[in-house]
Image (tube, rainbow, N blue to C red; front, side, top):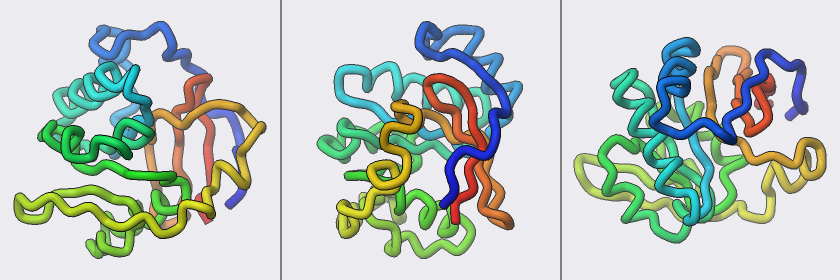
Length: 173
C-alpha cells in the first residue's frame, strides 16, 4: 500500500454540520459510490446523521460506519437501516478486502464486518487487529482519521478518501 499520491481536493469539514446545505452540496458534487465515517461515541450522532444525509441524497450509495462507536455498539449502529455496513476493530486492512467483496459477495472474508444477510445481523470475527494499516503505515503522516470514501476503482484499487483536512488519493495494494 502506498501513501497519499496527490492532493485532489481540499475541503474542511470540521465546522460543517452533517445536515448543512453545504455538506449536501458536497455529496451531490462528488456523487460518491461509498460514504464511510469513523467516529467515537461522543460524535456518533453527527456521523450517523451524515450517513443518513448521504443516503437521502443518493439512495444507492453504500454507507459504512467504523470507529470505536461501531466497535462497541454494532447492534445499535445497524438499527439504522440507512447504514449498510459497519466495522468492529481496526478496518484499515479489512476495508480493502471489503471493497473487493462488494463485487464478489463473499463478506465472510472481511474481518470485523457487520452486515445484514436476509434480515439477519452478521458480525464477523476480528482476526487481524494487530496488522492495522494506519498503525503501521500512516501513523504520524497526517495525524487525521479517515472520514469519507468518495470514490473507489476496483480495477486499479485506487480510492479517493476525504480526511478531516482534505482529500487524498490512495492506492490500496
